[in-house]
Structures are given as structure tokens and as C-alpha cells.
Image (cartoon, rainbow, N blue to C red; front, side):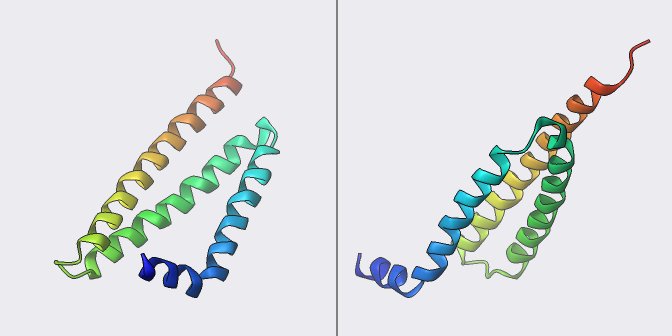
Length: 102
């Protein structure tokens, strides 16, 4: 328990920045009109593609006995892939609404 408190005390500024980024992201995304949803989803897909590549690099450079890095890298690849695929599905469905029917 003491190690965790020491780590939190040492990284307190970074924790504040992350918490503020979460609140700012929620405020910004919550106020986006539905017309801009598709461009934002495309941007999010590109960002998650970078996350997937970064996670693969982390997993490749991690030691074989570093189970935490391997597990977090695997989860990042899995969740990033799910988010990219889901984003493309949602974007396709949104664009389908604007296509003219014959």
C-alpha cells in the first residue's frame, strides 16, 4: 500500500492532467452535433490504428517474463481493433442514411 501511495505522490501532476483530459473530452464530444459524427469517428479510427501499432511495438519489445506489459499490450490490440471495426460499422451505417434509394 505504501508503494502505491508513493507512486501516486510522485506522479500527482500526470494524474491531474489525465483526469482533466477525461472531463474535457467528455465535454467536447458531448457537444458535437450529429452531422459531425462521421468525420470524428474517422479520426478516432485513425487514432486507434496508431494505438494498435504502438501496442504491437510494446509487445514486441517486452521481455517474455514481463506479463504485465504483454497483457496490457494484448488488451490494447484487442480493444483498439474492436473500436476500429465498430467505428467503421457505425460510420457505414451513418453514411447509408444519406445515400439515395432507387
